Image (cartoon, one colour):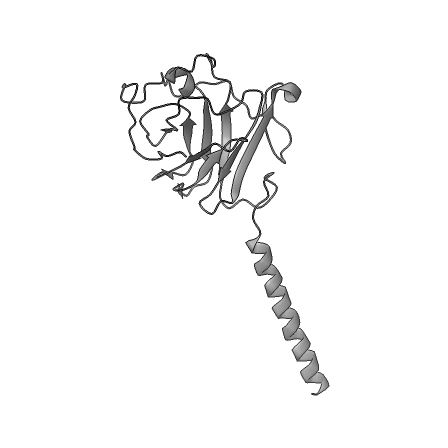
Length: 199
C-alpha cells in the first residue's frame, strides 16, 4: 500500500468513527433533570399542587389540582401516548390530543369531560404532594421532555425546574372557572374526548 493510499484509508476510518460517534450521541436519552436536549417546545408551564379545599377530596377540589402543559412553538405537537407522572409513579397518558402552537392544556386530577384546553385524569384521590413532588412529562418514546419539582420545606412551596435559574414555577391560580363538574355540567361524566387516559 502506498503512502497516499495509507493516508486515504486513515481519513476514511476517521470519518467513519466520527459518524458513529454522532449517531451514538443522537441516540442518548434526555437527562431526567432537564439538562439534555429538548425534542420540542412543549413544557410544564405551571403547577397547582396545593388546591383549595385539598382535604375534602371533592371532585371540585380534585379539579383545582392541575398541571399546565404549554406548546410555545408555532407548530402543533401530537401528544398521543405522552405521559405525565409524579414522583410516586402515578402516570397519566394522553390520548388523541394535538396541542396547537402557542396553546396550553391543563391536566386536572378529578373527573370531567376532556376538551382541547382541559383534560381530566378521572381520579378520586389527589395526585400531587403539596409538600414535595416532581412532575415529569415524557414523549411517546418515553424520553423526558420536561420536569419540575417543588419542596415546600426548602423553597417556600415554589415549583422549580431542574437545571433552571431557580425561579419558582409554582402557581396558586385557578383553572378556567372549572367547578369540578366538567364542561358539560355533569359531575360524574367520564367523557372520553381528546386527551383522556390514565393508568
